[in-house]
Image: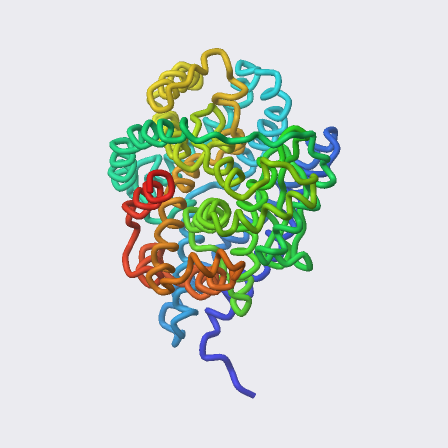
Length: 498
């Protein structure tokens, strides 16, 4: 009978596998809450999910793990197991900073706030939202303070680190400061250029059943595996579930099919990343997506880099004719103009790729002082209005629905997440620059409908790597350099001014 030479590590791997299975159930319960749960089920669901959050927290903070983590350090582990141990230690460290009661109260407060937000947003009810939001914010501030003290970080850095390990406000301020310098001028130049380009609006209505068929057709073309996932409808599109069972959502409107289609392409990028994470390591932290900026780099690689590529748009055109009947607006050149139209608007999820970073800068510049206690919820609307005017020239006064109530992130206490979207756009541009360097004929391949070149590169360099490397190391291995925002600027100028 042989004995493992890594008993402590093996015990840790079993513990994390159990947590993965319970997290699977928690994730599906969260997806169901957003898609199928009847409204009166919310209190009971919130209590059940809070109980599960507390149970998982107890497992992550089990005192026996401390000794096993220490012993595993001295065991003969291969490179992947060593990386997995690093990720276990990080999870254990973050969990042990937070008391179980805080984790449970946060889950309850966020469930209540998000559920009420669904009706408060359409009602433009900012005061009603704030009544629930105060509890969410107070708990987020407590979490930030505890994590900051334990990690020697600033409070916002500590919350951002949950989603984007290693990213700091100091680094982000440089990146966003540079964006602020060139973005407003680019928006003006592109709009002046596009003013001379006529664009035909599609004529609806567009039957919802046809839209759904179209979205699923495009998901298949993009390689989504429907035997390991599905598409549903929710208030706010998202991608959830687990790698073995990916749950994507979108939302439909009869007068506009493009929102559902581009949203679905975006979420398909997330879904394919999840479906292609390394199966050999499944259930372990090393098999998880590296960071949320990398996750967003996948959705934006699909939606913006590929989805708005003229070669890909030409392949969408016949699908639209088939779904809704042929019309001049579906001609490839017009469809491309529709998808790349730059028009500052109040809604982040509807924003074009040129104005989108302004929406992220605005949220970052509000939620950071909010978390750090420099401002209170009452201060948010006036700040929002001022920054909307400054960054995008839009008047949002009195419009809470399309202003600070528009996103699900604050009611769900996802402070520190927003920067990941624009960091993701930067990484997506960097990935495509690296692909073009490796494959000079990439654009011709896409135009021929050969998308395998894109997917194979992402599979080899991003998806299959999971969390084996730090984000910076993974970027260097994939593209030869760490995060380089210059690729986003070059991409936008080439696409919109070239």
